[in-house]
Amino acid sequence: MHELIIANLKLISESIDVIEARMVNVPNADYFVQFFEGRTLLDSVSMRLQFIGETVKRIDKVDPEFYMKNNFYEWHKIMNLRDFISHHYEMLNHEIIYNICTENIPQLKIAITKLLNK
Image (cartoon, rainbow, N blue to C red; front, side, top):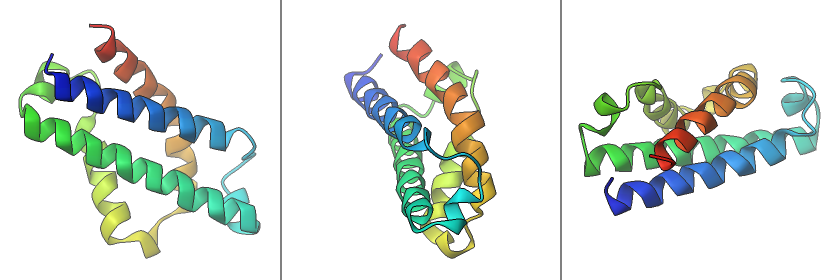
C-alpha cells in the first residue's frame, strides 16, 4: 500500500477516535440543538466528518482504484457527506449527524483498522 494512503488512513483513524471521545456524553440527537455545549459538539464532530471525507477524497486521488479494490465500505457516501457539509452546512440535520456518529463511525473504524492491518 502506498505510503501516502497509509498516512491518510491513520489521519482518518485519529479523527474517528476524536469523534468517539466527543460523543461519549451525547445521550441523543436532540442534545445537539437543546444545549450550547451540544451545538459546539455538533459543529466539532461535523468538521471531523468533513475532514474524514476530504481525506477519503485524497486517497482516491492517489489511487483511483483503491476503493474498488477495498469495496467492503461505502466510501462514496463519506465523500458525499463531506461535500454536503462543505456546501450546505446550514441544512445539516442533527439527527443524521448523530446517527452517523453512533452507527456509521464504528463501522468505519473497523474498515480503517482492516486496511491498516493489511
